[in-house]
Image (cartoon, rainbow, N blue to C red; front, side, top):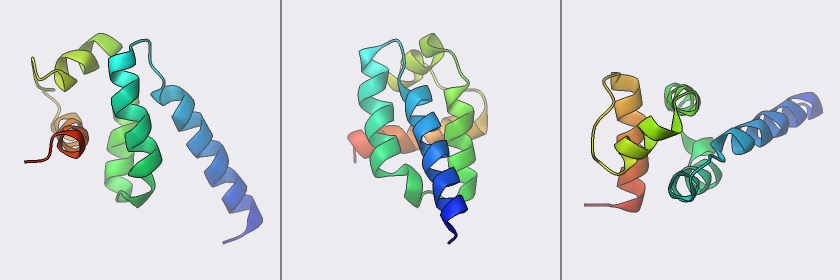
Length: 90
C-alpha cells in the first residue's frame, strides 16, 4: 500500500471517528468502540452501511439502539443489529 493510500485511509478513519461522536453519550459508547474495534474488519458493504448510519438523526439512532423501534431501511437495520450484537451477544 502506498503512503498516499495510508494517509487517505487515516484521514477517512479520523473523519468517521468525528462523525461517530454524537450529541448523546448513549450513542458515543456504542459507535466509537464499534468504529475503533470492528470497522476496519467489515466488508466494503458493511462499511458503507456504517457511513450511511452516520447520516441519520441522533434521535432515530437512539430509538434503534434502545430497541424501541427498528430502521425501515434494510441496510440500516443490518448495521444496527450488527452493532447491538457486539454489545449484547446471544
